[in-house]
Image (tube, rainbow, N blue to C red):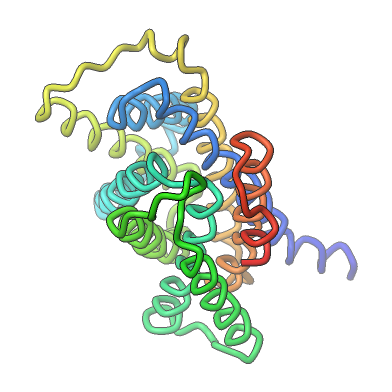
Length: 276
């Protein structure tokens, strides 16, 4: 009985694992952008991640065309969100950025209830209200650590990122009912690389593979992305998992990012951000 209970709730451990890795990855994004351009970082980041999924090629080719297309749709949604994410994080304190990503819980809850028919109990309501309070509090102190006002464009970019990420989370829950985590991850990474490659070609931006040696944050992020996403996809494939609960557990990433922001970037207002 105990073993069955543990196995049925193991998806929560996977979600927490993903959240911890995501929190660390957010800090790495800021560090990577100090050495490389936005598009170069995104393209090489996804390319490295895709290489790690190549062992799943045989399984991925067994997918029906419709699900391959859905992998393409997910890639467009996520890559658009990533663009917003990197734009926002390049000009904001990492602590403020991480707290604002809590808005994903609001979007995901609304989508999960509306389109997936998930329950919305008292605990969900309390958690949602706490998130909204945190968002209001962090925006009351709307200054960078250098005293300058935070640009509204950067805030809108974060909201764009969390909105698209919420759509992706709900897609994962639906797609993992018919696709294996390995299949979903392979096609998502494959189309993501193509997505950024097309943008780079259109904008005629230079990209060098040698950057991977200079900017070691990029390959590290690529590995953590694949490993973390695999944990999340496995969690989504569990019949017991719920998108709304998963989103709540994922907020552990915010705590990790705020702490690392203080340690690595010496950001101010640490306790206030942690409270938010």
